[in-house]
Amino acid sequence: MTSVQHPSTPPTHTTIPEAEIFAAHEGGKLSVGVTRPIETTRDLSIAYTPGVAQVSRGIAADPQLATSHTWASRLVAVVSDGTAVLGLGDIGASASLPVMEGKSALFKTFADLNSIPIVLNTTDTDEIVETLVRIAPSFGAVNLEDISAPRCFELERRLIEALDMPVMHDDQHGTAVVVLAALLGGSTVVGKDLAGLRVVISGSGSAGVAVAEILLATGITDVIVIDSKGTLHPDRADLTGVKRDLAARTNPRGIAGGTREALRDADVFVGVSSSKLPEEHAAGMAEDAIILALSNPDPEIMPEVAANYAAVIATGRSDFPNQINNVLAFPGIFRGALDAGARRITLAMKLAAARAIADLAAPDLAADRIVPSALDPRVAPAVAAAVMAAVDAE
Image 1 (cartoon, rainbow, N blue to C red):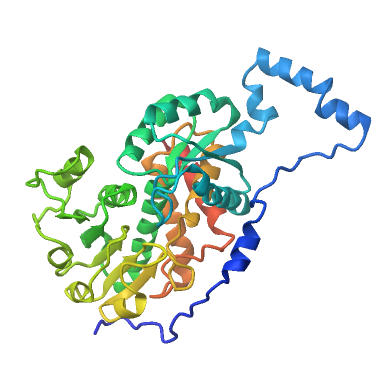
Image 2 (image 1 turned 180 degrees about the vertical axis):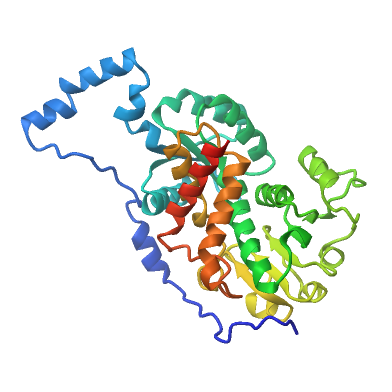
């Protein structure tokens, strides 16, 4: 048994009827509104012709006016090719659109940012880059979403180089930020030093790689990443370029094998793949362990089972305590970047965002509350402020 007391009240599960879900999505989840009413001839003359021509001429003479006199600088493009949607996989552009609409709804709800879903009927990286470069005058930031690895790494890198605006693949960096925030809180609850944690990450896709990178940047040195064939280590001959680079900077004890071997005496399990965590493997973890089983809708290990071996348990679901959800991160990150006029989203901004999230949970930190609620209205403003401060410090 672990020494940290577990919550006495078990989580409740709520099943939402399918008919209610489909009804809520009927007609889509977004609409376009106007910032000023058009009710009179004068209103029409100002909003459209002839008045609008003066603004267009002004922007043609001074392109910077587009920042203040159009919505482009405050508009986030939510972009996907539908190849890695939630836990559904490669379901295509059209089927991904409800998810992208939902993402846009979250941007508006939590950060008061306008956004527009853009789903593309191509998986060709060159075509996606070319498309976004051509329509770039229409928006001020790009949120990449649900794009399969390893293509997502090259796509993000090339867009950052090609576009003079914030670009972030949320499946990578949003996940990494909230995982770091959870470990800042969780390590405090169990009384362990963050930098000294032994961390095992199950999943070497977009989320797993980004989580590993941010933990290494924080000073955690004992990080092991596992893919479908076992732990990443330099002796494996089957690694991609991304995995080979990661293997060279992780797994300092040279652990070979799978989750059983990697989790022996580990302090933290981070699940960001569809693989299951066998109970007997979890049993080998260190005392007062932390399990973040983040796969949706089915965690790698159910919380009631994980509770036998871990002091702190989190999932990606809203019907369990400690929901580790990207909505804690991305609205505030983009809001802060746009408010600061940043042209890039940097590591310093992501680290600041994680600390801001953790700080909100700190006053009443507990084993079942290592991060604030995803619905906490303080989160996005706090993250935005931290991101802006990080921009000013650079």
